[in-house]
Length: 328
Image (tube, rainbow, N blue to C red):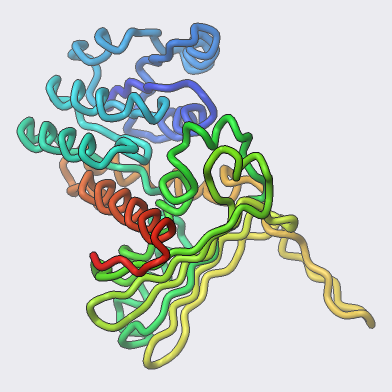
């Protein structure tokens, strides 16, 4: 049984707490959070300890750490965990500054501890099946990839100001998925964006609607379309076109019932919240991390993937600001 110290008792920390507790090989050993109310509630629910960060890192009873705290704490906590020889699961991103990410990864490399970065969409069953079918040669050589990612509603402007912007906060998932699905590093990126959804987002210096086009060395291209608003639910789709056909993964709906009548067809909307849509992905990525702790596998999604995704987000922003395609 692996004992886990959970850093962060907020919304995403609570999701991970469920998966830690439900897995037969892991136990929620302790909770670390600067807000006592959150920490006490979660610790009480799972009969876990409340610890400070230093206590958790120096405790020999802690085998692994799950970092789901605020983004600005991630790199420092990763380094601290690495120096204490803990196996590390960290929610994306490692940091919002690329140079700080590289410093952090250098520390992890010196300490030689496994680091898994939580790009959970790689572990979504639908997207993983699409990837497996592509790798098996089902559609032959990839020609174009379309990634559609639209949130149901925009976040508060206060969040936007500290999030790092649309590309680092939201698109970073899709940039990682493009690399994952195509299996290559892009060689060029071009981005355009607008603030159409909420004027406060524009006032905060960000965009809420974007298109990104990436080129890959093989000639394949990927298009990402993002919006902070989708009136019909959480819109998450992939379409991969290849020389021998098309692979597509659609939305998960609130239910699968369809009504057909003289006016056409009525179906349920896509699920509204990301924790509903990606529930199975969070479970699957935790199962993979347990295999990492047990020494059965190496992390499929490592610090390098975190670095590459942030690099692409930065270059997308550079393209948006310059209006030019950026060579990578």
